[in-house]
Image 1 (cartoon, rainbow, N blue to C red):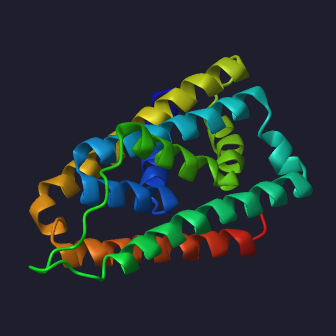
Image 2 (cartoon, one colour):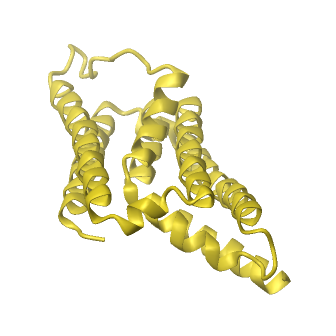
Length: 210
C-alpha cells in the first residue's frame, strides 16, 4: 500500500512538471499581473483537472477514449480555443510595441481574479488529452479490492492537490522576480512567447491523433 502511494505521488508530480498550455498560462499571468492572478489561474486549472478526473471516475471520459469522432471533435475544438488565446496574446504584444513617451508600454486593465481563474479553467478544459490521461492514469493506482469509483475520486483529489502544490510553487518563484518581469520590453517578449507557444501547442494538438 505504501509503495503504491509513493509511486502515485511521484508519478503525479512528474505529470505536473511536464510543460504544456497550462504552464504557459500560469507563468504568463504570474509574470504580468502578480501572485493573485497567477494563483487564480492555478485554481482554474485545478478545477478543470478535477472535473476531468471526476468524469473519469464516473466513466464518462471513457467515451472520448472509445469514440474516435468524439475525441477528434474535442481535439479540434480545444485547438481552436488555444489558438484564439495565443493569437490574443500575440496581438496584445504587437499593440504594446507602440511606446509611450518615456519608453513605457501602454497599460491595459488588470484582469479580475475571476478572469484569470476562467483562463486557467478554459485552458485545461480545452485539452481532451487531459480526459484520456485521467481515465488511463488514475485506474493504475486503485488498490485491489477497493471500490473503483470511490478510489478514483480520492486519487483525483490527491493528484489535484499535488498539481496545486507544484503550480503554487511556480507562481511564488515567478512573483519573487516581479521587478524583472515588470520591465516593458520583458512583458512584450513574454506576451509574444506565451502566445506563440500556445499557438504551437494548439497546432500540435490538432495534428496529433490519439
